[in-house]
Length: 207
Image (cartoon, rainbow, N blue to C red; front, side):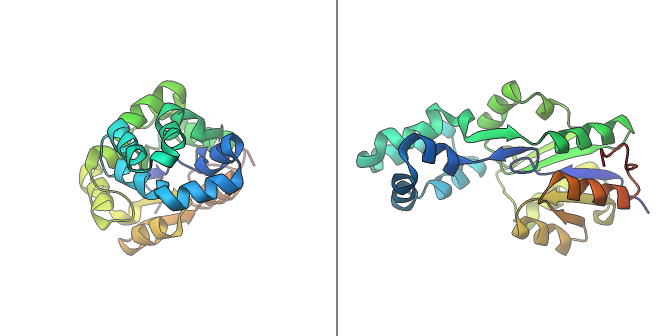
């Protein structure tokens, strides 16, 4: 049986999420490594993904590391620059699925307010049939509860959902619930999987 809905992660699936690359450009790789180690910026971002307030969380971290205050505040002040470039092949796949009447969902670790900001800059974020955003739900991948929320809200059985994400732990958590999964590496690999599932033809998938 074909899947009833296709679930997309966003970062590194539809658009590159590259905070390290941004900081490397701005302060250099060596200083970026020292900053991320001292101030634990990925852990800070995880708090935002779990629903912590965006500006307050970052500025509080900056105040607790005054030697890095200006650099940490860049995470807030120039946040949109942490994204890019877009992965146009994946965006085209999302649109091809919707054109065929296949529901497309977002399941993303993303702050609530930052998601709204991103929607103003990345128009494809307005095209999902359903959005499951960790900052709104106060639970993040790979916690089982967030996958359960998708199942309960959509009413679709786990084995009729197919999900792509670039992180193995997120994929593993979904697979344990019975979801069909694909670990994203390239849009072409994801396109081939969608063809194999009978959801798109090769032409529709851009292959």
